[in-house]
Length: 153
Image: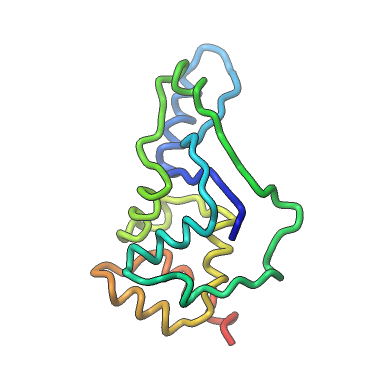
């Protein structure tokens, strides 16, 4: 849960890609929010969206850790802002809230961290309870329910 990532909103990244393609000559750009947050912060915010304390429900299974994964992922999107006029509007908390608000999963490119998060929750009844607390069923809860259906024991 200590890994850190720059959690961004995929549709904004697609916009940045489109802007890159509009340039007269190809170049390299770093696309991101410029902010780094831990997986623990991401999970805590997700549970906060449905009024629950993540520490009561999440089980960390170290067998799912990837030993070759980098611990901290950072970005500096300064060049994208200067050259393309692009910058993110949505930061990590905004992304989590949008996910918890029922946005369809096709709008995302699922990262390994979100996939890992889905496997950290083992209790399908808890997932349904979390979804019931929210007026719209969270797509990531649906994803988690499917992911853990054969995994929970």
